[in-house]
Image (cartoon, rainbow, N blue to C red; front, side):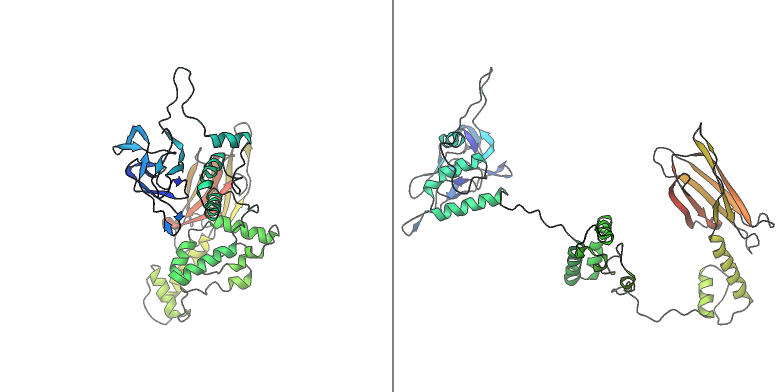
Length: 406
């Protein structure tokens, strides 16, 4: 008969369900469709001590709609049983078979059951426990109730309530805390090892964890389970961790517990040689080590350029300006180097990029040098980057700062 489609798992009037096997090539809501003459049901009822095992679908089905060569089954079709036939009472209400709409302004085919009409008008009360369920479910359960033992019916209603999420829970679920993440990480570490836990920690949203920690530190969130000191430093360091916690930063499985590196002439020679200076192994601080060490110290001093934003003049009409930077340099350095200072904008819509070259010992009489970047757009953000000695080793002096907020 026309109506909602029957699918694998649909409910029958005796409290059982359709077990198929169904047609695997035709899915209704992701499960096989049921057909007349091929599929079976199970029945939980008993006659005395004899269980009803359930038998085939005997229809009538929808003879005009064939699934796998057999008539499609819909709500109302009967399954053979030890007692009276068990009709399908709960199918797929969003899939209708054999209920085509009328044409030429006519109304759609199909009609509501007497139980449904009674529930709508208030003449029939919904079965106990189904008051919060949709009207269609109330109607199906009202039709099932006469055929089911009270306890079985009660269990079925309780399961439906759980399935539809209409429980009496009114309290919102508890929010996850930093302590919850720690518990998860420690459980992974216990079962899979530290590396697995650290790998999992790298995929956590650090920004969210930081916000949780900031809420606790500021006092907006009094929950002690969001204290950043709860998080072991072997996984990560959160905003607000105190000094005592930071002192434990080396306490993790990757910590190197070997002999402490000692600063001596032999190690100094080794380090300078690795940096490219012409020194050999040994334990004496001779002239070669002295000159290489002096050059290295001068190189480190030059890396610390002192930026003095002297003045920023604006042309209001064109909204353009320039940036003048004074650098403290070492003109007497033992090696002349060509440092590259690049100022560029980090805006996606507009772009600005300019590189100025600075030779440290170009003017032996000056200890300062000025960089001038002109025609800057005051609405953009800028980054200043230096390539020391053209080595490719980049150092950012400031990053992504709005114009004038250097």
